Amino acid sequence: MVNGIIGRKIGMTQVFEESGKVVPVTVIEAGPCPIVQLKTQERDGYQAVQLGFGERKESRTSRPKQGHFAKAQVEPTWVLREFRVKSLADVTVGSVIDASLFSEGELVDVSGTSKGHGFSGVVKRWHFAGGKKSHGGEQDLRRPGSIGASATPSRVFKGKRMAGRYGAKRHTVQNLPIIQADAERNLLVVKGAVPGPTNGLLLIRQASKAAPKA
Amino acid sequence: MNLIESVESQYLKSDLPQFGPGDIVKVNTRIREGQKERIQVYEGTVIRRAHSGARATFTVRRVAFGTGSERTFPLHSPNIDSIQVVRYGAVRRAKLYYLRERTGRAARVKERRR
Image 1 (cartoon, rainbow over the protein chains, first blue to last red):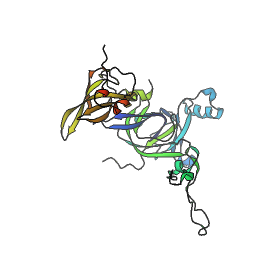
Image 2: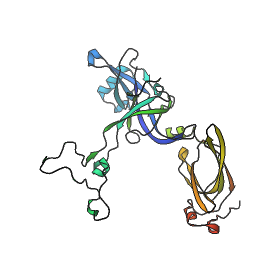
Image 3: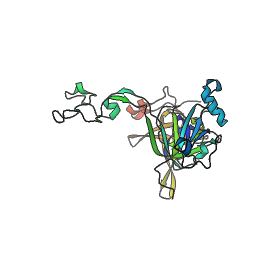
Image 4: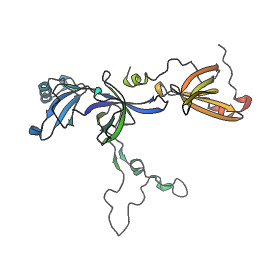
């Protein structure tokens, strides 16, 4: 059983529960994802399915990739991503995974590349409080302050939070409930926020840590 | 129609009256008390409409016993049973925040003749 699908973040909005409670949601265009290749224990040392997602012109596809897609008899896709699976018994190359993989109320993990913030200071990157704006502290508004003691230990500890590149890293948000799944419109609506910008690539999987349904 | 609009469209109400800033409205809200449900009415001047689609809200200002109060409602909330327009107002701006600084006769909004 394939337990994940590739998607594209469309944006956020809000919906209403029956009780009138407002729920923040992210709208994701998910699938359809053709299975392009199977990775097997014997040949590759691990078991996975390779899914494609999005459109790509044949003329814009490299020759090696064209051959790869032709072998699976599927149209070239924008991206290829692998999903580890326990068993390859019920999957075939060329079949298509769509949003009906998930149902309402199910929990999913969503992975993506977070928005890049460039070289950021400690206030933005680590939520340091910064300095005082008054009482004589005007010169230290967004400075990090002390980064450690003096002669002992005579060095800065590893992992000390400092300014640097922030964002544009792969992040996963776990246990987001599915509010709506519609294979016809290739639509997934999940509660809460997911990493990355609008139009960013997302991987949506069954929640790995979710408690089994009673 | 894009995907966000198609998600929001399932939640939009189609039976809303036309109203805007300056209008006096009665908002009938559903209140749950234990198992019982009743309707509570909030009447006042609309001082703001904000956002669009499923996220649209409006704010009603009401002065009761000399104390001003404002409530912001999600326009498409299922907890809003209905909205009635009592009087149309003639105003020249979209956000009527200036009403907050005024009391009594100065805080009135002229009626729009139609």
